[in-house]
Image (cartoon, rainbow, N blue to C red):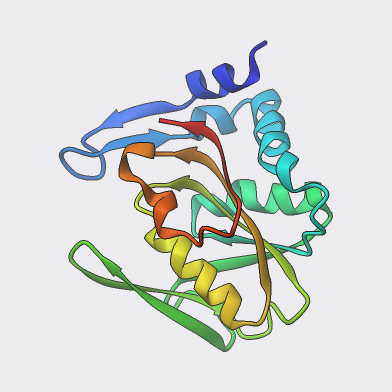
Length: 175
């Protein structure tokens, strides 16, 4: 089995979701297959296995699925980053620009500290705004970012260019 090709074939495209013109990449068929799920986590983790990752910071909501598995695979803790108002404890926030307006993400104030070596994960990198905001949030907590890992990169949106050029960016699949 050609693993990357099998993963690519398991991603289904839903036209015009959530609005006209968007070609949504649906990973639920991949998640339903234990063999592909295992391989996706393995491929996400591979470039970072020797980097001493202590925390995987994953972005709401689909990033939580593979992010928690990625943390377990790397022997690291898991830290959720969520939209404002969704976490129960005191938080730190980062607001970032959208095409029309702004959005805010949060993380618990005690989730990270100096010395933590963080791998940031989300299922998809599109324009890169949320991943860039998450990077800033992690850095403000005093932790170091060892890399960013995405299952899918929508290359035509050039989201990787919004990320710190000194931080390795890894995407298993590129569309």
